[in-house]
Image (cartoon, rainbow, N blue to C red; front, side):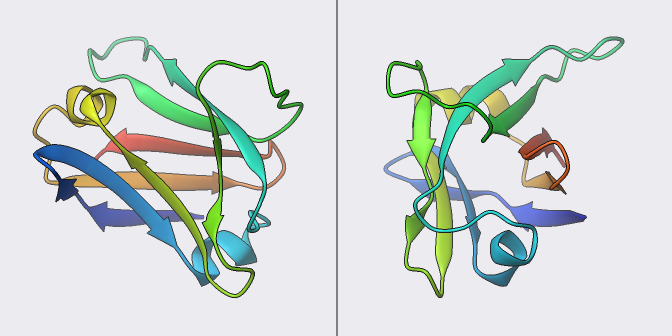
Length: 108
């Protein structure tokens, strides 16, 4: 499943905000941990940001957690790295891959 979101901002930095049924229906529930991994795209200078949920350890760099509540899970990514990743894009596209246990985010 793919969904397009509008880029939000927090304290001058871009913010990626994904919430609610879209996460839950794709198997991404409150409290699950993930690793943020930037992936170079062949043939394009626009990288992809992946949130990998399988085999996450406490020692992993760039780890995160689905916040919110059981009824309303939230992925909230913000900071300088998000601004650099989105590079001024007004939208981003999230692809939910339940079989790979991963969410891939690209500039929209």
